[in-house]
Image (tube, rainbow, N blue to C red; front, side, top):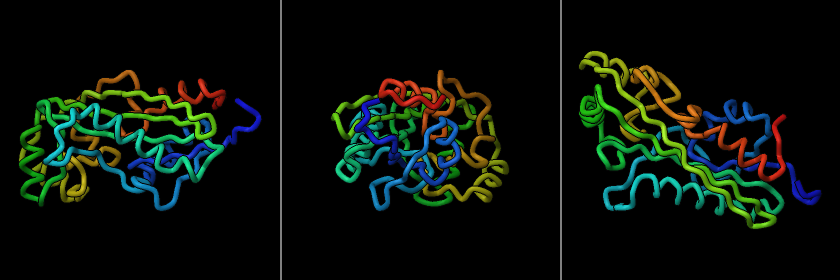
Length: 206
């Protein structure tokens, strides 16, 4: 790492509140930008009704935009931006309108597989170098009945999450299988891939 490059790593994503502990698992200290786009929240993303961009490409675009959004405020830092878009049957999954819609969405995915596209962008604000990566997690839902879906929504109240799934809470119990080369991506920050990218910048957690 260049002597002039700060060791501070700034993380701007939609999972900041729930990822303070998970990001520390990478062995690197993070500062969370205040007031930055996407600096709070802990849910999966979906596409807006008018957005025709492919879900994976959308995730990458959002992650890069988040990294660049705070670069000027941290000119000597590594900026980590991440975003996640859920895809079902080839389309980005949006957030439910209400409880009835949430139940409908969950029932439609019962026993089926969706893909969470988690994008990561690491921007060296000093040099301008940008690294990007996309990690997919194929997640198969259990075959759940109405009572179980009702019980889940009673617990998580996940109406502000794409697909009505809050993965880092009881939502993980909805799945029977997840498949990825970096399973930490499921909660929105792929730590294995992030470690690779930080090491490429001369920052090692070891």
